[in-house]
Length: 77
Image: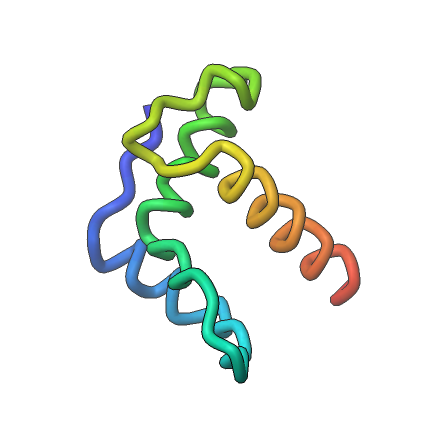
């Protein structure tokens, strides 16, 4: 089982830019560390998105972030 320290999660979270502020407000941003833990849980367990425990936040948010991180890494290459 993959376990990341708080320092490691903080380092990764710092590399993810904050979304631009919306002039009309909107929902607050998802917690980066919690969402990252959800991504790593999926990768570590090989589970389906529907099986993601609620402790990692919204399944759709974790999935969207996973797609964003994967696409941004692909674009760098």
